[in-house]
Image 1: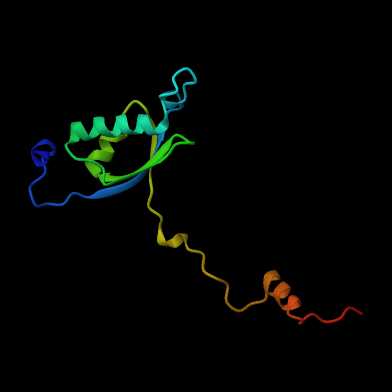
Image 2: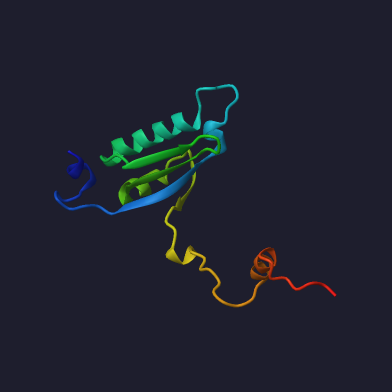
Length: 126
């Protein structure tokens, strides 16, 4: 049973994390072995960790051309995933609200001057 394997209490919900995992290049880039794709290596790693931890990831998205994938899973799963030999790095995939760029209100900027000139607000040159 998953709750016995992972040491969780039944009915308690574990915290989840969204991360982006980068694979080691030598783990999936081998011209001699075409079966080593990022997708196949990712599946192998995820299955191995799921067997060890007792839970599966909730969401997986593989970026095959760059040898990376994003995954949403319980914290214990992510911790085990980061120690796999094929994994080069793990980075959190949450964006802070402060990343939003607020528009400039009022004030005269180069952009507002340019927009005004397109609308016919430009003064004729002397």
